Image 1 (cartoon, rainbow over the protein chains, first blue to last red):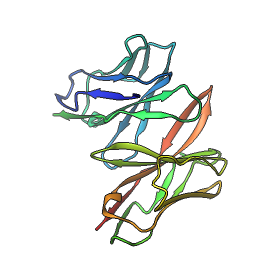
Image 2: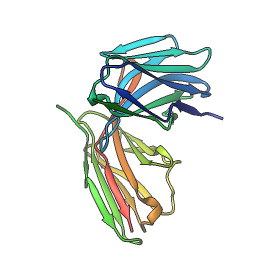
Image 3: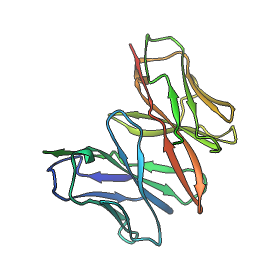
Length: 113
Length: 115
């Protein structure tokens, strides 16, 4: 069954600290994996996208990694800011043509001052 | 700054009423998605269109939901009749292909409450 599981469900950290969010998937065949950030009351915004051959990609303080062998991805946030408080959604696209995407349930991150 | 726009942003209606949600994709994007998001289910794909033609609406309850794209600047999602379980945030996203990768740009969403 094609699934995307994220952990933890929620996370509270202090401003300035680093954190890592996890995404495990069982999607096959694999095409690409995206991380989205969704602020409360807004639509998701793409942070990174990685294909099979890529194992790391950065976007400012956000760094995503992908291990296609173990079917795991992580999103590392460095020097967190209050504005990082949001939901982070992992999305995997199947390599079957079209737009067969499977969404994770998201990790809710709270950054406290 | 090109953006996807959605109207209305909020809608409260009574069960049984018709609801129409509108989406204006980014100019030049020829693919539009409709999603529904709830706390319990997360994001679910309802339907998507390319060049105004429906490509996949298998995620959409056919008996009450319908999606159309009458022209390149407007996509609509209609629910008739609405039910309380339809309460959710509905997002549209317009899509552009860059270097073989499809990138989605989400609108701000329509928060629907059916009482």
